[in-house]
Picture 1 (spheres, rainbow, N blue to C red):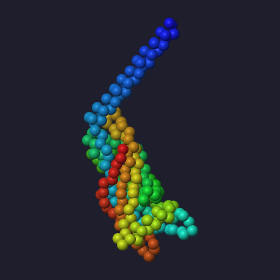
Picture 2: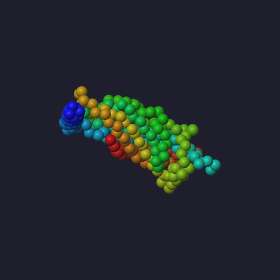
Picture 3: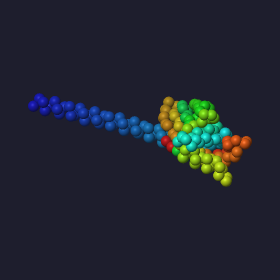
Picture 4: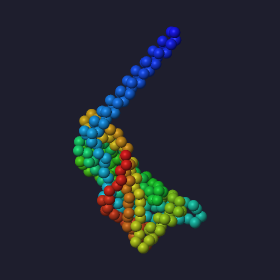
Amino acid sequence: MASKQGSGSGGNQSCCCGKGFCGFLFTVGLFVLIYWAIFQPHHIRATVDSATLSNLTVSNSNASSVAEVSYNLAVNLNLYNPSVRVNIYYDTIDAELRFRDAVLGPAANGTSPSEFYQRRKASDGVKLEFDYGRPGVGVSVDVAGELQKEMSSEAPVVRLELDVYVRVRYVFRIFKLRQKPRIWCSLSIPVKAEGPGPAVGGAVASGERCRVKY
């Protein structure tokens, strides 16, 4: 009999603890929902103001399955905070360049600025620099061949993809909400020969809006 009473007491305690924990989670969830509804921290918006590509060359050796891409690229990215009440801390900004899903390298010199504070309804510019002269970036010969086709077409346009990874904090008074948005930008840069060598370059001032995913 004593054993049964002990078992029942333990079950009641577990039930009470379970209800208490569920109540705590409900309270926290309700608080977060009310906070989000009142302060409305909207997703950031991003656009490419300009991009300048220079010294783009592709070196392909028939004896190897790996080719080399050399280039310099500077991108001016505009970040906008559309929130009416919430400010944003940009804690880290990392970027990498891609062509047909092949990585052409991370931002060689980081970003400028690498972190900053942005007020509500404000825009700030970030400069991304990719400096891959000799030696360049190793890619497969298939990727190199596709890039060479774009460089030598009748109206040559090089299509690149910019991936930007950001850590932010939405801040309103004592409240903070951390997020890790990913920014994806498409760069279509008309190119032409730079001097007598094989290198090509070009620039674009697109103002094209990027996709932002949270």
